[in-house]
Image (cartoon, rainbow over all chains, first blue to last red; front, side):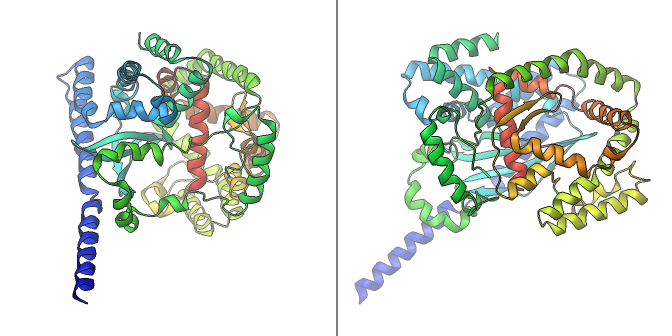
Length: 195
Length: 274
């Protein structure tokens, strides 16, 4: 009897601990997105900075919030990524990071809207989605930031812009390029586009 | 709703496509409209069992591969890809050579308050389209909200030139169109179709687009060039707020056609799920 009871207590204890460890607190990721966007807004409103200075400053704040290597990996997808040798993975990862920085993170007109609305965060398994709305005259763009808990804290691994995931959109392209060619074709095209 | 959304790689495999079609057509009715319900269960309710599966944090990345992104994303059949690419080129040139310069000039000439009022007015006049589709989808709450919005904007908004209803979230339901209505009836995308001027669409959404003209009061104005001019003005006015969006998308893409196709299908899936 006693042993049975001890086993039960132990199991309940484990379940409680596991529950605690995995109960997701949305405050941290929400705060991360909020403070990042606040910092960006502050930079954009600073009239002492030139356009280029603003861009660099924004990039310095935004880029560390994203897990760019993970985004590269997710974009290629399991099928293509696992088939690549290490050096090609690395090369793709750095080229794709550069593309993300240029096309999204450093796009300061993407943030320079009049108002940002925050909607309640949602948890998806062990990830957190933070939906926001960029509101400017005549236009509202919904942007949802998707975060996961990395070893270095919460990081953004994807963003949905008007319901369109950055990762899925690029995956559609890269998958087609890889199906009709090799990784070297894809890398060459990326290099070309970054010029 | 994903009944016809076959990955392009399977396009040529006729037998497989036919087989899948049969399976999807029969299964489609069962989970039409909301295929993601199961995936949307809040994490808190599954967290305990999840912990035993997810294990240590190092597995977190492999976790991504397994769930979120390994579903291949929303795909669409594209048997007319050669025609579509041609249309894409046509629209691209139309935008850069014609629509964009016009919208730019328009933006300079017409002050922003006027453009905003016109945008509100076009939205206001489009109420019957959204209302009809709310009703066709059985979304009576949204239909009520559309009606309330129409009433508020007709009165306090000076016949629709203003949008005071925007301040009340309850009066701003998601916008429904016939393409979405057809999707909730279990009709899939069919295939991807790029229309001249209107841009990315699918077979289903094109049918919806044509059908929505029926609900659009502007269609019934005489003589024939009145609705045409109003729609041209609507497009220009709307574009004047969105110059640069297409350029941004295009600059991020290696193959803008594929990017836009994926973006369109994802966007539609989102508004249908809402």
